[in-house]
Length: 301
Image (cartoon, rainbow, N blue to C red; front, side, top):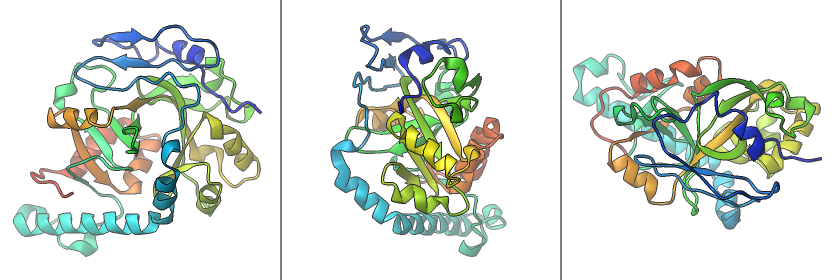
């Protein structure tokens, strides 16, 4: 079956849903139907433009991918430990904060704190410096990968009113009525899988989906066929998938430069925070994350 579910034609059909205002858009030269068209947003945002018709993040470093999967539990434990360190620091330095950050045992399952550098599974929270930049104003971007080809991610809080079937896509009927979300200005289809009821193990064992954090994976157009099969076998529920048209991408040093300019706040977070963005309350995600971060002045690497 054809696993391609979003084409460049389908993207152009939804431009009016998420207008690209107050930015300059540069279209790449026209390509044949087998290629995907990407666009680059001008300053102050730096994103990369890819014309590959076989876009596969991290394909050039499969050993790194395997290491990340094998060490996923240890990585999750480290992030929780780090969050507890931040909570303890806040309790020690502020009487006011100590009422809510009394000790590491009260961390809870919903937390977020600043970090200095992007990492897989972290959030980019748009600052006031991006106010007026329609695509990124008050957005929360989930970083899917920080591989050697540069960071990529999707905007979590930009739902559209379109479904997949309205874009004349080639996705199988299983997902045709699924709602689409605007993931970023670069034209490529992605989807997130957050399996429940034991499906996490099946998704990981497939070796096709790439892990973002514990309990959350992402797939590309090449893996949508497998996602359909897993839904039919009831290994994954239809409600556990979210589809994006477009994604965000930066050259290796570009995102660091944008962060230094103050365009983004980088935050580590628990999976429950991301789940808020994947639910029906994505419109409050920006305020929610800022509230969780609080008035922190220092970041933990």
